[in-house]
Length: 232
Image (cartoon, rainbow, N blue to C red; front, side):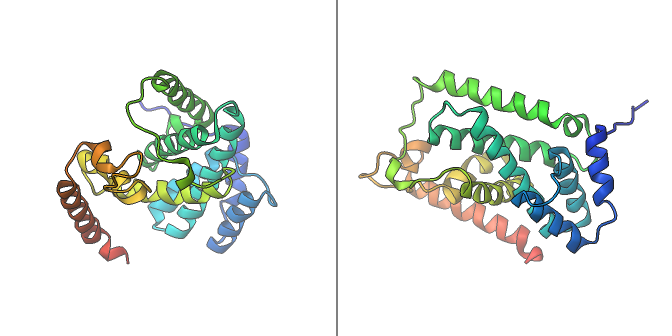
């Protein structure tokens, strides 16, 4: 027999508080949570809002909750891994956001992962950090030139990360695992397709000829446009 799962009391209290809010009121609550002006919604409550909004087809609320959650993750990781360089922390946050988005997308119901969110967040970040240490001196990829990224304190980047994470989550519902391997570098990265003057490019990084990568990009683009046309 399946055992019912319940949120911790502070999460349950937060969810009870927002349960009867109108859509506009809930969105205002999420916006306040992002700015820190309103009551703080626990991370587990944000996950619940994301999943519930997805079931209800409320894309705007889902997007706001994702932004709030990704900003929260960014702030947490920025402090927890303060010894890393700025670029390494951004890379860790991006990887962590990807892990969290995939876990959120696995189900719409309340699962053990959701009610123990903080523990799973910490564990995922620790795994990413351990991989970072393992790759520190053995990474075969060249670093993209620092000046092409500009300066960022991690705050403004959180909104962009949230948008990117949401795009990736929706793309993963349409594309195959092999296509997802090319989706981020071809559509979301700043790395040039082919540039002999750059420290690296996608041809060298992915080990595919330029023409092949252009064909893959066209195939993915057409597939996404066909799947997403009814939503626009």
